[in-house]
Amino acid sequence: MIVKKMHDMGVKSEHAYLAAFASIGLTVASWAGSLKMEPGTGLARADRWGLFVGEWAPTFFGLGLALSHYEQNDGSLTGAVHPLREAG
Image 1 (cartoon, rainbow, N blue to C red):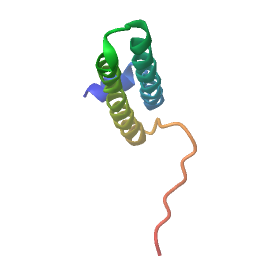
Image 2: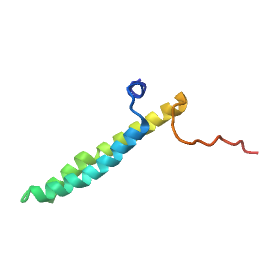
Image 3: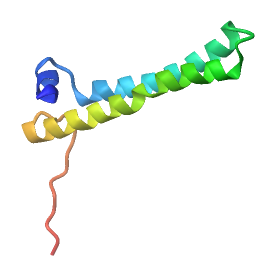
């Protein structure tokens, strides 16, 4: 139901995948930024920032997979798809 609503709002699997990769980059940036901009707080605080943002990526990848599955069933998946060949 939520995936259908997201699809109807125009969110595509590619958007979720892009958000996942962006959050991976943001994880590294937040870790490095916390390490440099908050001197004296130590490595543990930078690690917590990195882990906090790092948990977003699997969520976005999961949404991307769910949206991709919905798009395949709906027939709106973009890209070149090869037909399945029967074994024989």
